[in-house]
Image (cartoon, rainbow, N blue to C red):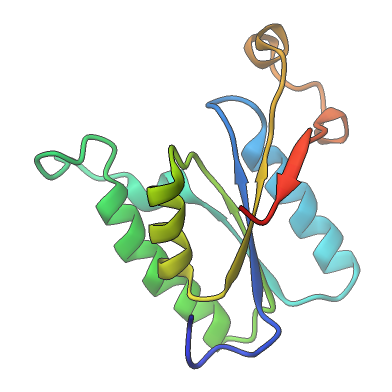
Length: 137
């Protein structure tokens, strides 16, 4: 856990397949937090892994994502964020654990799911994106 973070800081990871609406939902959650006056940050994990070339054996630059995430979330927490909303693909429990360690605060995970036809056609709006399964694992 992030030793210097406020006791009540928490993070939410919106996980799911490419195109399911993670970023759209994260932005909507950020808007709701802003409307409620809750200090927060919304982070699209894809941008934290974008570099070339990737290290050997790390095709999707997950190691780069972790290093950047630890730095970025630390800055947001130091600036007073109480909620971190993360959007990205985490492939397994090992990656989830590494991501939680990098974030440094309690991490809940919400896996977004949609029918393939909907993913290929694109979400009409953020209000139609409805997660089927959300929990802390």
